Image (cartoon, rainbow, N blue to C red; front, top):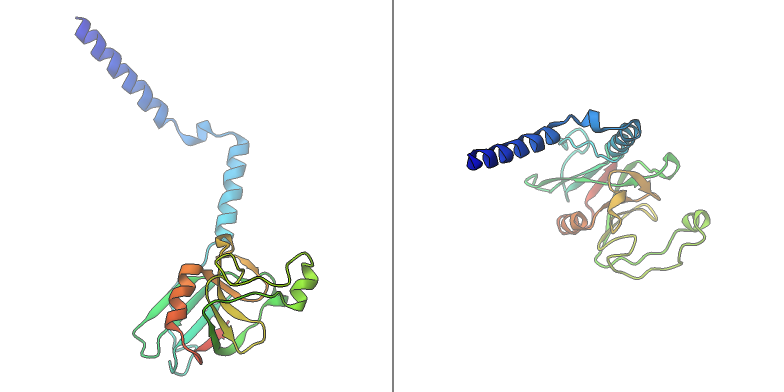
Length: 197
């Protein structure tokens, strides 16, 4: 009989534990918790890139030297190799305001394997506390690699601050996770055509 009683006790314990776990989350939530969840879900939506594969043909006449399409609205960078065999899609950071955003056709003019960083005059004006120079390295604002564009001061580069990806957070450049810029750096060439839309 004592065996049956201990089995019932174990069964009872398991049943009570299961009931506690199965209690609906709403019943456990306070209005503050629900508000917090709503705020978090809205901020996550704002931080997400809209990933959708693209065809290069509406944007480029051909793929000579490869092609990079940066979609500011969806915060995504598309890359096609010159032979069309390689297609890559990366989440990006984009300029924080329309004033800092540049759209149109450009090209890769220089591949920098160890970018150092100097804030532009307008960046320094907005942020006088920033240093005048930062040497190459993973904590550099340009990350571990940089693709210079034909527009002065504009780059596609890595970033050590992963919170920036998927957001309007840059001072004009297009930012990628460091591991993605390493890959794109190897794929892109000088004269790869670039279109920002």
